Length: 126
Image 1 (cartoon, rainbow, N blue to C red):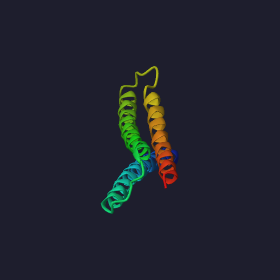
Image 2 (image 1 turned 120 degrees about the horizontal axis):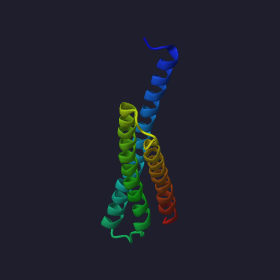
Image 3 (image 1 turned 120 degrees about the vertical axis):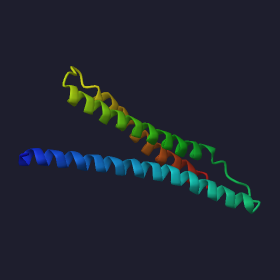
């Protein structure tokens, strides 16, 4: 039977995974939603015959945010796979999962930063 400490560790780990998944969802939804909203806006403006603002930079930032979110998800998966293998085999002298973990964090931070930059650039175009 697991001790209270072991149970607490397991539940904390599960909640960390849940929070990570929600963070990835937020990043994908924010950047993807911004792309869709920007395209809808440009289509509406163009259909009225008005001049459309140059939104290539904001769109590029939002797309970079989506790609970065995908990279973060991939690295998060590899982190978990590597951690599983390290624990299963018990032979790893150096923990490779840490490399993938920090790479995933960097991709996620880049994704959020890309959204912020894209939003700022879009606002400045009006």
